[in-house]
Amino acid sequence: MSNGKPKVLVLGGGFGGTETATYLAASVGEAAEITVVSKEDDFLFRPNTIYIPFGLDVKKLMFPLAPALGKKGIHFSPGTAREVNPDSKTVTVEGYHGGFESLPYDYLVIATGAGMRPSDVPGMEQFAHNPWTPAEMSRLGEGFRGLVERGKAGERTTAVFLVPPNNKCSGPLYELVFMLDTWLRSQKARDWVTISWTTFEKTFIQAFGPKMHPYMVDDFARRGIDAHNEWVVERERGGLVYGRGEVIVGVGIPVTRNLQLRYRQRVPGLAHGYGSAGAPATPFERDVEAEYRLSRFFFVTTEVTQRRILSGSASQTVGAPDLNINLKARWEY
Ligand SMILES: Cc1cc2nc3c(=O)[nH]c(=O)nc-3n(C[C@H](O)[C@H](O)[C@H](O)COP(=O)(O)OP(=O)(O)OC[C@H]3O[C@@H](n4cnc5c(N)ncnc54)[C@H](O)[C@@H]3O)c2cc1C
Image (cartoon, rainbow, N blue to C red; front, side, top):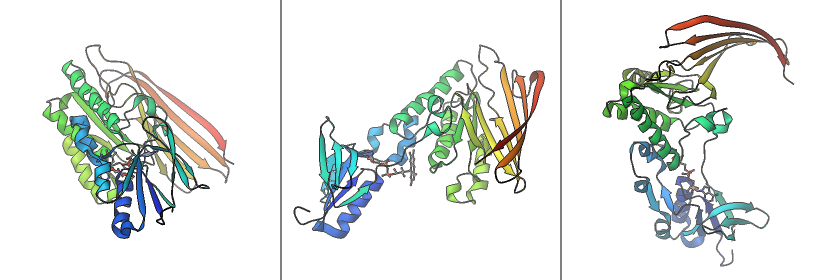
């Protein structure tokens, strides 16, 4: 408070940081010294990044922060916040060209945004597109264009969209799946691509309330998208966009307080590309597990697994089905 004014330091130049800084400036005027620190020079209008995979130039979504904040009497300090030091009430900021400075604060707002955590689901980080940043959206666009190229080469592909458990922002993925359908139609490529959708949500786009569900069911059906709610992805081995690996999803059904049924299966429709290389032998796997809680700590589980080799299409089977029944016990403490 060297000039007698409290110093407010806002970390992050997105919606959270800029709205906090501008509302505060509007309400306290010159009574406080407000500084926004951001690792980007520009504000990014993130909601419209969904258009990047379909050709939008990201520059159209970027607006320089310094002049916009300056007009409101807010300082802009470019750099990456590296450390908050609550004892000295300072934040260590790394400048664009290396070098560190220590910015003092009386009040600190941290609005550095959210990100994806694909490592929560085995395989998701290596094999899936996890679109959140503009760069990831660009890569997704390459994947989409690849679907068309492969279709032209005579290959059928499957694009699987997954909303993994605990996701708090599924809306953009719904937008992307519908836009992919529309875009593929415009490219006359829709017939070459099977689109599947699975979400852990109880109802489609649950954040908007249960009333949306029937509309979404209709829209998925109208567009020929194979859609499932209350399915939880467990592992992912390269099935997304090209449908070349495997995606296992499961659903848990509580039968009584002590009995839980769990069903797992490869995402339906994930029959892969049967291009000129011919039909791959695709193992089909489904698994039903019943878990009974004997006491607070002990559980017994019966598991029935069915595997068979598929060939040609999802409905044709060759080879005898392979059935395994396992009985397991486990305890939790
Ligand atoms: C594809 C997509 C579509 C969306 N569509 C909608 C929609 O239609 N409607 C809606 O309400 N919401 C939508 N959202 C969500 C919305 O965009 C976010 O909730 C919002 O952008 C979050 O703003 P934020 O300021 O918290 O974070 P961000 O926008 O991520 O901003 C964080 C800021 O902090 C900066 N930063 C990060 N780390 C540091 C650091 N260490 N030091 C300094 N600066 C740092 C970043 O450069 C950035 O400027 C969408 C999100 C996505 C990804």
